[in-house]
Length: 156
Length: 156
DNA sequence: CACAATTAAATTGTGCACAACTAAATAACG
DNA sequence: CGTTATTTAGTTGTGCACAATTTAATTGTG
Image (cartoon, each protein chain N blue to C red):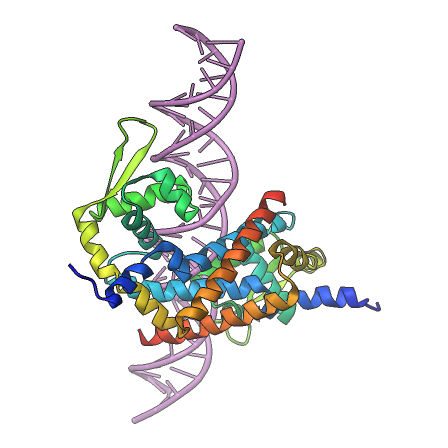
């Protein structure tokens, strides 16, 4: 039962506190918790907020394009957009030129919400206790990680 | 309509590519995708894998303790543990000493699975294309972030 | 001891992520 | 032109996260 150092190392890696995914998952959920508090006033969930960000920034978009910006498919977006429509924040209508496509556009109410949303990022940044430069560095590190993982997933 | 520099800055923050949460969320989901592939052989989802890690490392634990390690409550764990039990990987039984508590323990089949799981972290690390030291640094940064966000959530 | 407060799991309900599939429209090609 | 392939949304089903509530057991206190 003598273990080589390679085996010992593999065992070490199984420890929960060694797993990068665990830290990442914890951070992601912690963020979600803060967003839940901050977005409560706006009546948005965090994924709904991301969709509104995309629409505020780019104007009316087909569902497909919204999904490309957020890496989400229609299985996630269709019901989410329906809820945003029920809330009166967006309208969805079939494109006349291409009837496969559904254009999503922000309503007046949705535009009005933007004014209140402007303060959200500041509150989130404050909650991190990181300064702007630290956040930028972490963000770029995470983006590297994501693209590495995405290419690995394609091959795996 | 002249904007002060403070207002302009707030507008900038609303840009999707400026939001740390977006990078974090994307990275977390990218990880999930890689885990889905790697864990498929083991018949585990990623949260199920985390639960198994905890049980492999600490031995039999009440549901409460499992939840403390993973920051999950019974609303998430109860159905998840039922599925693990159905899969034959764990057993759940009411504690004799405290009948409120349910002890979760790995079955022989669950123990056997550990041998195959040992190689999972290595494959995940490979997918990141980061070296061990880079991962360690990122992990510790994320842990700082999580604890800052957790304290902020308590106050907010 | 009796009764209130606390604790541990489970349940219910909402929303998101993702795989697999369907329906309808458009594009591509012989 | 007509048939096939592709594209776009939507639907269905599974699993997770989390809030709110429920049930049962235990602990604390007068």
